[in-house]
Image (cartoon, rainbow, N blue to C red; front, side):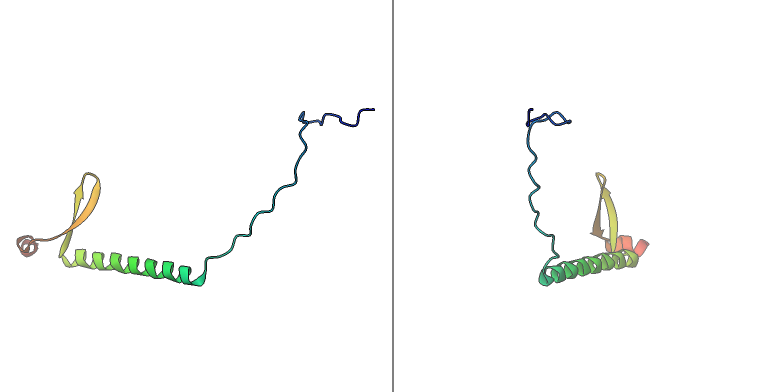
Length: 80
């Protein structure tokens, strides 16, 4: 009797056991804190920009599909 029968899936290759994967861990506290500080700083910058636009000191300008912000001239500010 033949001991090396072809398996039902048609391949004669032997299966190897899967290799162990490294465990996923969280970031170190110092890197997490730095990322949170960066996010807080970005939120503060956006809040400051919105305040400048609301005060009429900065105006949004659309340029080739991109929105940029520029200071408003004194004449434009007085007219508004």
